[in-house]
Image (cartoon, rainbow, N blue to C red; front, side, top):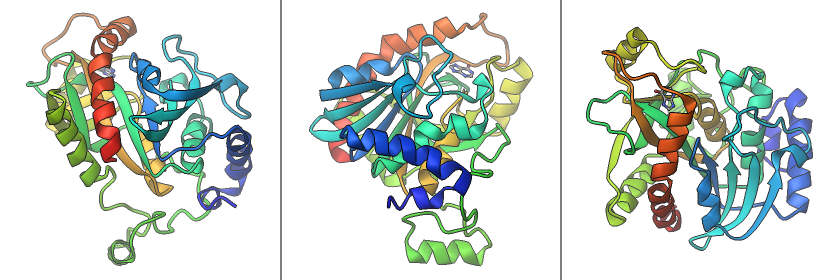
Length: 296
Ligand code: HPA
């Protein structure tokens, strides 16, 4: 029995297990998982010996309503590393309950990955960020204000899977037995920065805020996020990261800054603009990911 499935609540486990069994039978497994954000899906072209299934064919999966988010799960090797890639994701703004929203992430974890690279398109709050820049996510503020794990775990306050005994004891002492010292893996983040330097890709490092959307932020909200210390804002990633970490997967986050988010006003922003900038930088991002994967 898959150990990670046991962490899930009774009402969720069977649904996740059905998809995991179906995919495992087809040979879907890997060491590193990738979740590709808006306009960034082309990384799958770099996957060798690729096997792909449409989300719609996987038992229990809800298909995305957003045209640009092709929904496929791809398995193969990239830079010699066995990977499972989510090409496209569901978003909280689609209005789905969190058990549906996070089912593909739970399945990804239960396919046996050790680490996950979670990517997204984001607005740049930091004044130094320009469209096309990349940012490694050091930490996040989840402004969905909905704990993504609500109702999804068998034992809500059990220690995080894979956490070492010392960390678990320390967290238990401060009353945070289900908490995490570092949500994003600091050593993976450092390796991603190193891979960026080696591949000549400029890289920022900052805090990601996740909002519901689908409306982009009002000027006053942008001002609030800046004052809260956020460097980039998007509409995904945070719930997935919390779940991955809880299931014992080490997450590393990467934002592609597609537009400046300015409280002084900005040109009207459309989803299409975001996707277009994503397309512009996706080759750079793919190059970076190929340099990073062997270090993971
Ligand atoms: N806000 C929220 N999500 C986004 C943005 C933004 O400005 N750009 C890309 N995704």
